[in-house]
Image (cartoon, rainbow, N blue to C red):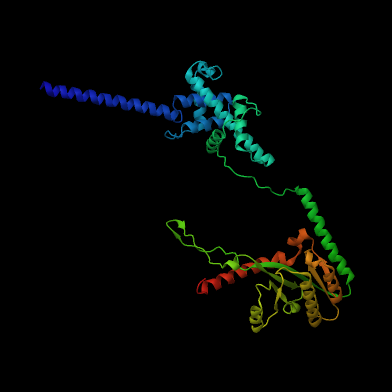
Amino acid sequence: MSEEVFQLQEALRTNQLQIKNALQRRRHSKKREASGGLGPAGQKATIAVYLLSDQNLELSVRMLQHWAAAASPSSMDPGRIVEDLVLQTPMETLRQTFAPETQEWRLAVARAKKFLAEATARDWVAQLNVGHGVAPSATEVYWQYESVLKGTDPEARLPAARMVRKWVCCWRGRWGVRRGAIRPKLHIETPLLQAKALGIVEAFWRQVCYIRRKFATKKLVFLNLDETSIGYSLMPQAGCVTVEHGRQVPFTAKVKKENHRGCFTYVAIICTCISLQGKLPHYLLGSRARLTKAVMRGQAALPQTNLKVLAQQSAWNSSPCMVQILEEVAAVIKSVCSAGTQGVLLLDCAPCHLTPSVLKAAAVSGLQLAFVPASATHVAQPLDMAAFSGFKKWLQKEHRSLRSTSPDG
């Protein structure tokens, strides 16, 4: 009987001890949750940041989150937690932030000063990035940190490069900074740009009005000629691509080495006369290395259309080619339109359009040239505005269709 009583007493003491420990853990858990998951050291460091930063709540919350990262997350508002910590701390304890008396507070103040120096360095980097377009080096960031923390003279001896790199690497991870270069971007004042664009467009339309007055007794047909490049291998269109286990399979499109680079030049001509449009020629220019004699014989054997394929020394449009195009366009206008029709050809300011031989050929052929300013082609040249984009998409669609039906892609 006495043995049973002894066992019951031991079980009761064990149960009471477990209840006591559970209550103690619960009190500690509630206290820790109320402080945002911070221990005594984290609380002191957070309070020190709040007071030394002149009550900057944002920095204090960041310090709290840094210390509470390994602890269980709190459901309370972190800003409210910081304010409660400060309000619940006695005034005598808060004074130790500015005159620490214990080792714990001296360590907390040192941590807070390092944290604030890092924050100042981060703000300095952001100011240089946004305001000046400069990405400072690791050494410059380190010296900025040291000058805030210790008042170090920038002319003093540099620390070991390995130490600087290690510190900056950790600092970037803590403050969301990456290593990279800031690319230059053309910057023009918006009012200046608007005034310049307005003046350019006005000059173009004054030129058109002058041509209308010059040929007031004739029927005007406006034409637009422009070039665009067509690569040997067209850029792929976006479509459906299979995935495996949530990851895209790295498929590739086979392209021969000789087709990886290089392009043809396509010369298009559109006009305001519907009956004339179907008769106008258009041109594909290529180098003789690509458009060989065999290729040209094969093209000549095909049913002929208004597309003319021209093999040259280079695939770029040239002055002799423009002379040929102007002569052929003028011949088509004379054969289709009445005698009182005047062709007005809009061209951009490409060098091959401005040579004396081209201007002379236009005068001999009876074509009036009107030039679109270089910076106004996107608003004043019809082919750039409404034709080439759809044409390129159609080419990509046809290219994809041909690849889909070819035996080897």
